[in-house]
View 1 (cartoon, helix red, strand yellow):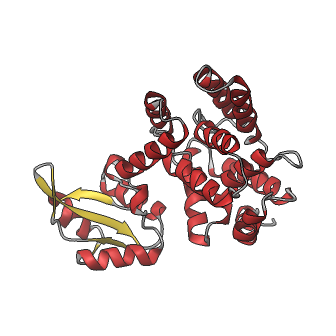
View 2 (cartoon, one colour):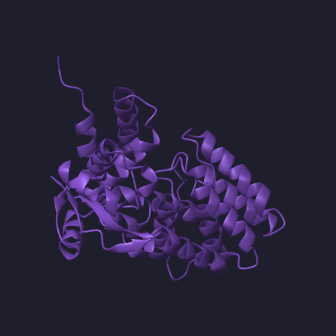
View 3 (cartoon, one colour):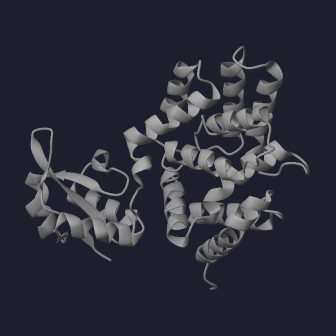
Length: 298
């Protein structure tokens, strides 16, 4: 476990910048940066951009000097590197292009939604999560899924965490109400009602048997559970950061309840594609996380 820095060679804002990374975890990187007085706004997904004037101080504090190519290889090897499509500006373009497939005549609404997903208090429920849900839907849709079903499920994905304050149940209800308000007159009323219904399902992730649209949205929303082990750890760390106002003990207890609920769901995933792609990894990840929250016996 180490912190690495490359030489200040990257020009911007009238100076040159270095990149500061961890080979272990984003949490380790944030802790080092905070101790060094680097503002959080300098963080860009998997690294901090730091000006040349800070270079010698950061090395003195323990950052190991490597060249730029080596730094990139370390970051890739750690599994922490953020894909290019998840970088802030490209991510926004990608999502807006996807919106244009669903409701091309409503670009203002897409910008409003993007602003909501980009709120600064979010750490997991961000545009990256939205894109991952939409990409999961791409994998889950079957050739015979009707166009109107696809549109409704995608609209529900766009709205399902449009309101996020960390209040389970209340957030889903507020997001559904927002969808009902903003989609009125833009799509037929029965479709608005279906979008609202689907959003509310993400509070429990328990669609009724035969609910194809509900199965698709819930499986896509839970696809994060089937990430590789390191990616799952990043997800849990991001959720922890969203609850940074909660003590470690209270978070562990609350999170353990969530994990137990997910493990009790049978089936956890409803579609065959999701079961094949994510079920085994999800159950392993959840079981390991539950063990990590277990309290030692007195």
